[in-house]
Image 1 (cartoon, rainbow, N blue to C red):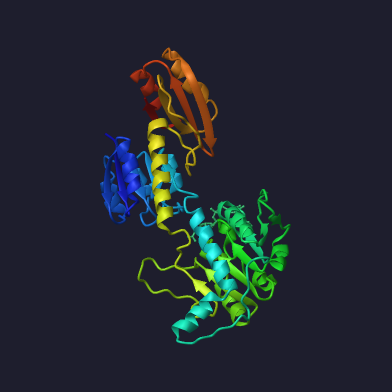
Image 2: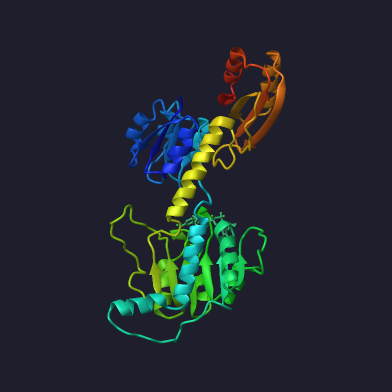
Length: 399
Ligand SMILES: NC(=O)c1ccc[n+]([C@@H]2O[C@H](COP(=O)([O-])OP(=O)(O)OC[C@H]3O[C@@H](n4cnc5c(N)ncnc54)[C@H](O)[C@@H]3O)[C@@H](O)[C@H]2O)c1
């Protein structure tokens, strides 16, 4: 029986999905350090983690039974993806299970800042009745500038338009404009147009310091800035100065250059105490709905990989979308991507009188993944021959 070790309090749906697939599930509340993890992974084929458990090259090298790792979150920085791929360990994550949660909080931030809600709220809690319409606006008719028109940016575009906002966007990649959204040909054009600028770029290293003093200065006077993407994208000292000078009239920041490690830790930032600034502890994507969606998404990916060999959306192996088929046995061969491997696999199959019913190949960098359906029984000698090939990283046979 296959075994899964699930750490860091994953959503119960993950256990349910894997158990229903006939996998024995062991749950452990917290994260584990390297040595603990190596010990716990003996005899375990599937590991489920969130962001606190580090799956290092040493862990992968010392977990000979491990087949797949599920990161029940968005980021995969905590996993040595290359080391995992080198050992044929598939890694899956949940790239868009919390997209909607981020979009909803962005909408809430946009309306709150445009109405100066946090200032009114603070005055009221301080015991001051500060009724005024000055500087408070409807969002209807105002222009939202979305930087990074990906999963989050595009969904925000649709919801913002339904609120009556006019949407412009800037993305370094070619993107289809949804609804009436208009693509800006440059970042500067967007900054000169938008009343609210919101950042949804990805975490590629080149985006460190992407939104600095130059970009802040090019925003319209009185505009609002949101950053729910990555902490290293915005120059927070520069932002503080421009909020204090009144050039920027409000900001909502959910991600920070350095973030405290755990709940209850002290939070330090130049943005603390500023007027009309909403600060949230990286909770843009943190909702119970998102947790449930992540639990389902990743557990299904792990289950499918085990039963069909499907690597759709794996972050480190070549991607092949595979369905469950009946009446065939499936041989999944992950190998070093060198010329002639496919021919060698097929000549081994043919040397053992094996008829190929179907075959798919995908490659990714230095790895190739060929999945072959065969009608007959799988000869153990043939399996040994495939396994013995120099290029073989991992071979799995599935019913
Ligand atoms: N606050 C949270 O809790 C939370 C939750 C989920 C995601 N995120 C973050 O939100 C961001 C967006 O997530 P997503 O799922 O939409 O990502 P995505 O990969 O779908 O989209 C990112 C888009 O940004 C574009 N882009 C990258 N660099 C750019 C640049 N310098 N200028 C213009 N466009 C650029 C890309 O071409 C892409 O279209 C990521 O950084 C992610 O880590 C935060």
